[in-house]
Image (cartoon, rainbow, N blue to C red):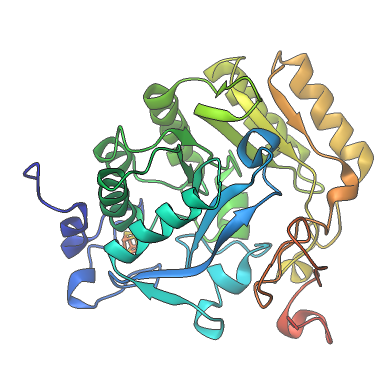
Length: 329
Ligand code: SF4
């Protein structure tokens, strides 16, 4: 690719994520993620519910892309990741997205936080280049599910300051069962190594706000503690200094009530066991959540402010036919 060629040219034969669909998104085709090349945004605004180094005191400038390259049955963002056709979205140009980033900076955001960027990585990269040219100074956060294409990450090297990926599974059977992806456990280790190589360990400023580095999120699933142990052991092997956010906020959302095992919340005993294991492994740079945050951090994208941490109160629970009366309000 020539130096000046837009990153989005890559969408003519899309291998932006590990699905490698090969479709021509520029010609209007769509692959597994169901999105052609247009930039579809579901929500943007200051968010105070991320980890303290990401939200800081003034909030993280979140930009939520519609759609996803996974199909997690427990997705807490299912309204915009899986059912985005039924919810309000904005179709944007690269220029519009750059303007949005600058607006969030003007509103005082500590960073620009792209949520679910794996299938929009090229469009996002073009917008970052444009925004930087117009005065974007704050760090850019890549907040992904971890199912990223390493070649895409290499291509955008230098544009991302903070990587905030999930490490959901190191068990392909679980990944297939709950996220419709059979090779997650094969892909994600290389992704995390690449991210660490690009930005290093998490660095904070004097106020404790992240300026650069890698912060890995692991959501503890009820009843699948072996998977959690495997994930944490991998992170300790990657480096004991790896910053990890051990998340306790699991509640059965979306289609999770159909799946035995994950049709309940996490218990305090399960969470404590995993936190203790992380400390035994020497993962001292761990962010721990209050169990009371279960439900509080579950968004409802039908509201102007989807998060309780930002305003209002959430519905939570499984959606659609899973539980009568629990459809998004
Ligand atoms: S970004 Fe979408 S179209 Fe491209 S490879 Fe991934 S799922 Fe397929």
